[in-house]
Image (cartoon, rainbow over all chains, first blue to last red; front, side, top):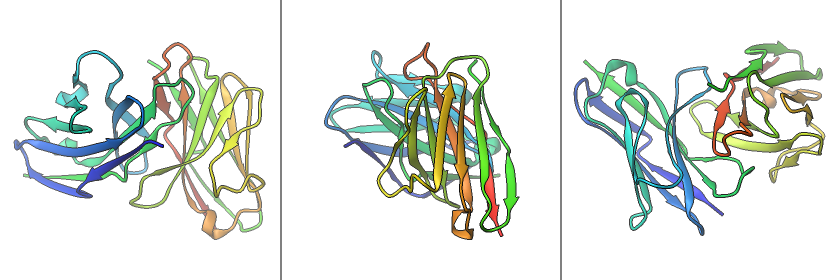
Length: 114
Length: 116
């Protein structure tokens, strides 16, 4: 079975600082990986996803993530944090099989201070 | 882009009553939809996978008779919480997989259920 582990339930950064949210996955087959953002009492918005091809994936709002098979990681980064980035971030995995659900990590709360 | 509409966004019901939550894909067809439950400050827990025209597949530990899922068309799935109790209070989120994009998962905005 596949799973993801998000290291750090809470990350705090200053505005303008680098954002790094960590995600490691476990899967017996090559996974498809996703990062979502959730604002309070709202659904999830896709930031980016890795399926095949280039391992460095660029998403919306300046976020990017790199798939590293050797490290089983898919960490999310953003060079310069903005106050509006404060939210809950979820890493998710699914199998390369259409119809399978996304399995989510426990989430990381990102706080941004001025 | 793909849009999923989920209604209601919040509902308060009395203990013992039933509540229906709708999840509609507005501009695409979704053979498969998923229902998640999210407790405060926690992750999304998959409850069931819903396939159009067939019975839903429930995750271990999810009561099929309490959480009734119907996926009667390619654009609509419903979750009915039957005989609701306070412990069913939670945030429920649906997700639809776009048939045109196998790994395009779109989420509804969620339903906050409070059982009093």
